[in-house]
Image (cartoon, rainbow, N blue to C red):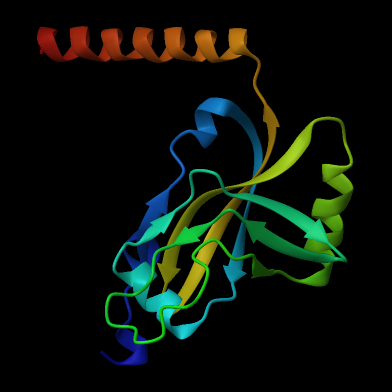
Length: 160
């Protein structure tokens, strides 16, 4: 496919994996898109859908954002399967974005969590969320609200 004819908009993103618990356990305040530094076999494994964001988190170490706990299973056709699937990986952000995120993380209770990994063209991207942890009562409230919305939608569909 020619470069001019590449798909644009939401169809251009191929989501590899989602962190479904993130929006339940955290109140998302802001989202940021970051590139992720991968080895060749890791990128191929991600294209096969072998990523897992369940225990992943992001921290800023020595002025560089890194993601820890991100698991990328070994690529099925890789001869050198000696890499740690949970190794730390560097995130690719502009210096101004890193400073802004670091300053906001200093606020009480804010953390950076990965929401999803997707491919934007040939590049792997990580959607990060600046989030605040929810308390148990907040989680119950979110569940009740979600169930009420489902009931309303179900009733509206039934009346059509």
